[in-house]
Structure formats: structure tokens, C-alpha cells
Length: 283
Length: 236
Figure: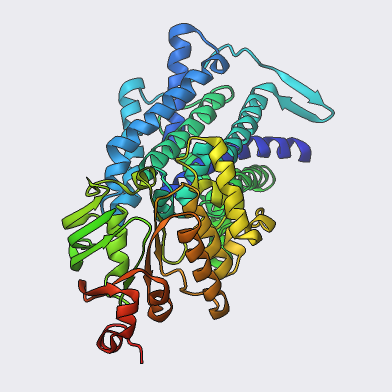
């Protein structure tokens, strides 16, 4: 039982981790609170769903397309909305993504209807039994995706020129401009990548989850608290924060009651804010 | 090389400087002096495109710099060491230096430049893996100067390089700046509050007061001028 819950918790954690890393990236670079991150994930689920509906492609086959589409979608959002909001007062900067999230949710209800959807006939399915633990292969897809995406993100941020430029911009924008980095481009790419991460996560989630247009909101709360736990702006911290949140989510849900899990999460949030406001790994 | 004329600029529509003019010839060390809040930093941030100019002209090698964004300046041959150093604190010294070469395409020249900088500042080679944020003020200043040199600038702007540095190290930093000018042939514009030390090696100097250029002259001449020293530079 314990191991089973641990596995489920880690699976859940990978979703929160993907969300949290996207939020941490955007916050760290441009001080925008990406409330729409969960909705980006939802949009990615529907893109996967529509690709599947139209062509019969498995989500895994559709994933590269979904990731690229979400990256471009992120860039579009940055150029049309975020770049403008950044010139405005702080309050609009904070709330713009909140409004965007609502538009995306309701837009999707308009487009696809409010009922739950799922992708049928997955390429990989079934379970592997390891003693008392039943490992769902569908969820394994999500775990592997999350690990690969996290690895790629770290590689990109630490090893590539653009990744280093984004880190430099997040650490000191003025100096980044002076050494020749176009900080506007760095912002735009960072936002696109954050949307692409949501793309990978959303696509992989269609393997084991039903979804509806308002699914993003539920994940968002956990995603944000995961970022607080890890420390705003620290991508590695966000990943660990997400995993911890997943484990807390499943353990309180299983051993106490599902109705306690939001309370557990909120209590943890209050504890962090009170005793470690910069998070476990915050600067 | 660089000609600034009647420059007006400032933060969010409130001009902090109104009518700064100065001229820099190739190979010179030009000092811009003045008390705290006189508008020295505003002037040079405007030259570098960090702040927008409200009126006046900035010409570099006959080409206007008005409206050129700051990330394009390094390609034109201008580089700046900002006040307070502005390093990337969570990157290593090596990465900080390499970021300085961000817009340099030729890999071979980057390696060569890095060696030159390690020669001038051997301590940077020893500590290249250390995070920039964990170093002392003097060491950080060396990284900041090194980083600004990585893009092979023709003109280097230094904003208060002696600020927040142990007095013992200040002389050393000034020696380095001389070396960069004489040996590497980089033209230098230096902003300083430390007027005495700066005038001692500047070819030409301008004094800014309340957002305007009030006096100019060779370093030696300003050094001897009692009026200048008392009224504008606060020296006894």
C-alpha cells in the first residue's frame, strides 16, 4: 500500500513539477505570475485530443507537434499580451495571466463543450506488477515525459547560449543588455519554453486522465504552492517542490481523506509563508 | 570618436540631466566628475541606450546612437562597466566572462581575449569556477571589467569603478585601467567621485553639476584650479 501510494504520489508530483517549473521560469525571468500555466496544459490536452480525433495519432506521436504548437502559442501570447502588460503598472502585470486563463477556459468550453473528454486506444497500456505495487504504464508515460522534459530544460538553461542568456537576463537585466543580449527576445523565448513545458505535460497527461476545459484551475493551486515551496525563480526548487506536493496530495488523500488534501496543502503553504518565505531553495 | 551634445535625459519623463556635452578622442582617458546625484550615471546610461534620450545628440564615429538599444552597443564597439558592477551573481566567474563575449562570433578570438584578461587579472583564472556573487567587491570589479572587455570594445565606459572597494585595492584597479588604455589601446570614459585619483591620469575631464556640464579642461589644469576643487568636487 505504502509503495503504491508513493508511486501515485510521484506521478502526481511530476504534473505539479512540470507546472511549477514553467511558473518558476517565467517568474524568474520577467516577474510575471503565470496563472494561466494550468490552462496552457489544458489547451495542450485539447490539441492532443483534436490531433487524435482527426488523424488517429497516439498522444506520443502527437507530442512533438503539441510541444512546438504550444511554444509558438506561448510566443504569440507573449507578443500580444505579456510584452504590453510589462510596460503597464505592476497590478496589471500580476493579473493579466489570470484573465488569460479565464479566457482560455471559457474559449475552450465554446470550442469543445464543457463535457469530459479522453483519448481512446493508447499505444502503451496495462500495468506492471511489482510485488504489491501495480505500476500503470499509462502513468509511466507521464513520469518519463516529465523526467525527459526536466532534463532537457536543465540542459538548455545551463549549456546552450540562449539558455545562458535567459539566465543572465533573469539575474541582471541591465547587465544582460549591456553585454549584448536582446532581453526582449530572452523574455519571449522563456515564455515560449514555459508554454512548451505545459505542452509536453498536457500531452502526456491525456494518457491517463480525463479532462475538461476547467481542469487547469485545479492543478494551478498545487502548482503555485509547489513554486512557493521550492522558492520563486528556482527551477530546480520548483521541480522538487512539485514532487513533494504530489506526495502530500496522495498521502493525505489516501491515509486521511480526500477532503483533507486541500487543507493539508494550504496548511503547508501557510507554514512556508510564515517560516520560510523564500522557499526551501529560494534566493 | 564620441561626441555628446546638449543631452537631456532622465527617468520617467523627469529630466535628471539638461544639457550635458562632452567629447572623447580615440586613445584618450576622459573623466566625468561631479558630486553624487550630479547626473554622471544618467548621462552615460543614456549614451549606452539603457535610458532613452529626450533631446540632444550622441554621435559615435559619425553615427548617431539615439534610439539604438543597449544590446546593439557592443557590436558598435562600446562597452560599459555599470555602477555597482552588476555581475550575474549565480554564474561562475568563467560564465560571467563568457557572457561578455555573447555577441562575438569568432570563437578563436574569444579564447585569446580570455587569456589576455586572465593575464591582467590572474586571480580570475584561479577562481574561474567560483560563483560571482560570493566574491569580494574588488574581485567583482575585476570580473566586471573583464566581462566588459570580452567583446573587444574600442571605447570602455567605467561607472564608479572605485565604489565600495577597499582603499588598498582602489590603486590597483586604477593601475589596471591605465594598462587597459595604454597596452590594449582601449579609449576610456571614467565616471568617478574620487576626483583626485582620476584627474591624475585622465587626459581630459568634464565636471557635471546639477545635470549640466559646467567646466572642462585637461586633468592637470583642473587639478590646479582651486575654484573647481572647492565648488564642484568638494576637495580641500
